[in-house]
Length: 133
Image (cartoon, rainbow, N blue to C red; front, side, top):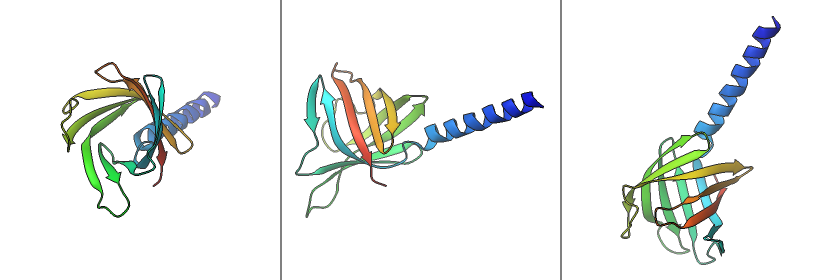
């Protein structure tokens, strides 16, 4: 009986963890700052960068007061344990990363999403995004 109880507890924990991974990134996030090659870069005071994630896709918006939202990027993503693989499929500006999959380590603590990784050009990044919805 004790073994069955332990197995049920393990299955419940695994279900909760897999649900967290599957749903953890869904929603609306706003950029709050980052570190790029060791240099701290705060969020702009003139505009807001926002990312919206559904089950497998994301869109990125630039929001300026008095202006229509500007959709500057879209793509797909996949989560695997602590890794987020993003593939940009649309960019409003010329982009070296179009149709290139970039892998980041991701972590969610409270309402903050952190992406850490190395871009294909060698830039070391750590970005912080605050969940807004």
